[in-house]
Length: 96
Image (cartoon, rainbow, N blue to C red; front, top):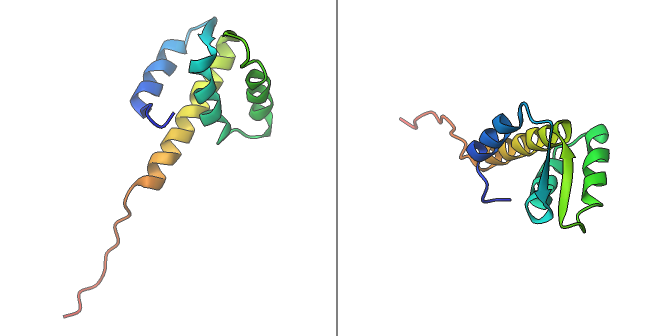
């Protein structure tokens, strides 16, 4: 999921805003779940792990709330990942 961008996740999240449910191929959902699990708290991780147990299925049906939660958490994880990789600037007094 390293190749998905924040912008792509935001676009998907906007598309899911009014979604009542969706069906995704397991190969598309798996990396999203793995990304979301990085920042999921105790409550959300239960839902994500339940969805991960269904990965053996070819397609997985999610409710609108589930896909929005997964996309929100994946976006949060991706933003945190991008912050970690940014170079940090530091002001150093001159030696004059």
